[in-house]
Length: 296
Image (cartoon, rainbow, N blue to C red; front, side, top):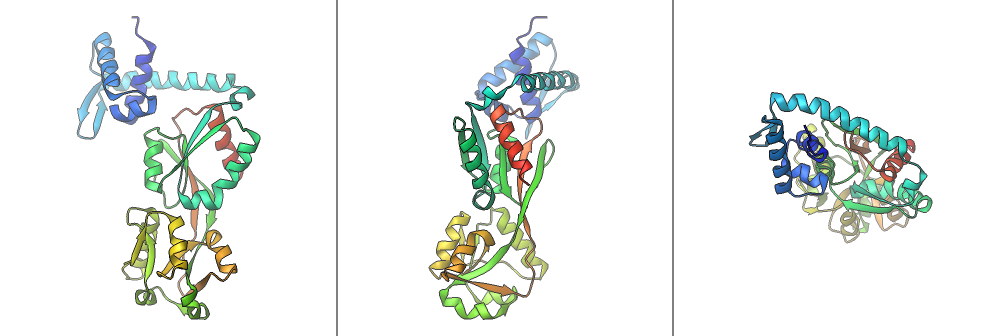
């Protein structure tokens, strides 16, 4: 039976993502082309491989059998590619990374600087994502991996590896200087304007869960889209905010803002890497991932 190998490659990605559109994104193709290829494969094999569902597609028993063999074959091919790759693979190429602003500012920038100096021919594409957006981009194959701030919930075949911990501090503008010599509680914060990331972010969910654990509601007066927007708002006296300590340190030392003590302990958070264990990476992306993981 003379079947185009490309059909099997497309079949692998459709089965992996259970979705024609996601498979098309991962392959850099169009959804109609993916559909036509799978229709052609089914006709040549004389069986139905997928059934459509509300969420995408699902493998039939025949599709499951085929996937077992195709996935094994793809793994062998990618292993062979890795064995054949040499240093020339680091002279050119590109890497796509999703990064939350906190992760980028307090961890990833230094690693990217060192990598770029060592491999100047590699193009870096950095996407500013919230943690949920970055995880979805990894899942759909749009980026090679993500470096984000936790909490970050992932499911197989995605993997999550913690890289470093950080803590956040409560800060306010200079009009709140008097609070610097006091100790507030989370309950006290209801008497002050509060700045926070938007409700769609994992940071908001983190603090919302923290406030709820003390029987309190998190009701910020100002919501921002990115972490970088918070510090200028604090300096402009719009309210108090929780900011990663490394990002607030310089402004605190320059007395541009004031750190405020809390009676409750704010749990430490993690910077983590999220990647798809079944998604093949080029030599450049594998090397950068290795560098980041070894720097923990």
